[in-house]
Image (cartoon, rainbow, N blue to C red; front, side, top):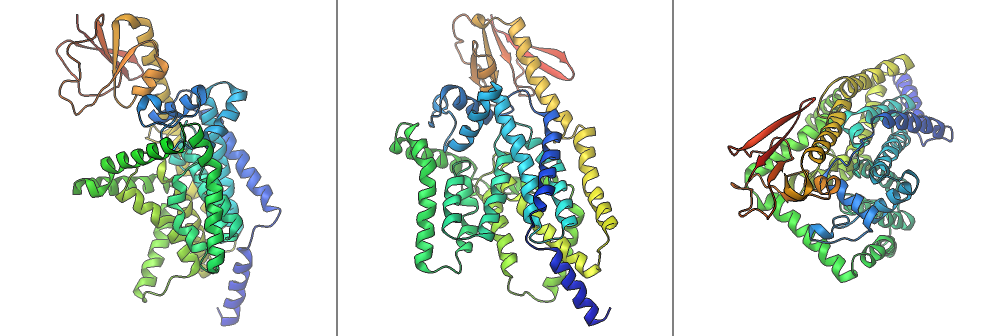
Length: 482
């Protein structure tokens, strides 16, 4: 290829990766609709986690952030706009779980559509489409879009805020940054470095105005959160205590060196699941990066800094400070996908890949393995795993209600303790800690004749333990104590 031909190819590809045009909204709408339709058949029918119950409490009993477990509706800092969005849906669907899951379903579809539109800033339509569909089909992303947790919403907000800070930094973007923190306050910390980067060309007066904009935007959620939680002093005290408790139990600074390895391994597994459809592209991008490093370390471009500041701070937090759920790192996963779209565009320019059939084959190669994992396997992140979790909870709840009277039964549970309190409200329940040698209180409360071991697999095996097989691989145990 001559220099002139190379310049023409480069120019053609640069024109392909431009700001999204109006008709791109149609493509994004189709992505949204298809993703939404793919989620609806697999929606979880029961509250899937400890935090899900806390959000349900807020919907049914009123928003109130407290430090004691009995006061948490939900836990600090509360995510008042997330609760409000679910409350609006609950007015139509009636069920707290369904409302919370619908927020995840809609946010999951919105994430895929926004990812496509933002990726079009860096790559041609075929690349952006392939990456967006791969994100929507990823098993981990798919599961998070089916349950009553806010992490699918976290992904959508991360894309929207990152796009805003990339395209329109300034006062309006700063106000939006503060306001959207009301859905997930951790976004203020995770994307804070990116917000600072967006002000790199502003004057000091402009930076001060933007800082004031973030503060004003934050008041939109701080004021109602405090008002509904006993006042500003109580709210701030609760948030500080919550942060302190999390830091004391999960920060690498307070734990042994083995904890760092556990956290690193978790993040490696998260990235393996979250990029299951993109591993080949990630390897190509990594190879290209190593090639560049061998040629010498050059100062990062603005685009590279943008992606670095979107991804690296969150990665550091999840490794060194806290990560409590598989969905939390969804704040950084979209950034990796958009960065890979930009890397793929660069690779396709070098190889002069411009034929649509090639792009279509590449998209199929990305998506089909993920579809297979989610729909046809029993892997951790699959439709079968979702169904198994739902069925297991429902079967155990039904068995307890049918065979154990509330007046003479106490229930032992670990990670499902709040779900037991929610679905079996008439029963006495104890939070079982597997680290304790003897989880049974002595003496037992008067009138208790049997203790049901609700959580499967907990290491409790006194001689009087009876195990019942409920079918479909679901088991429950109980101890006759009198």
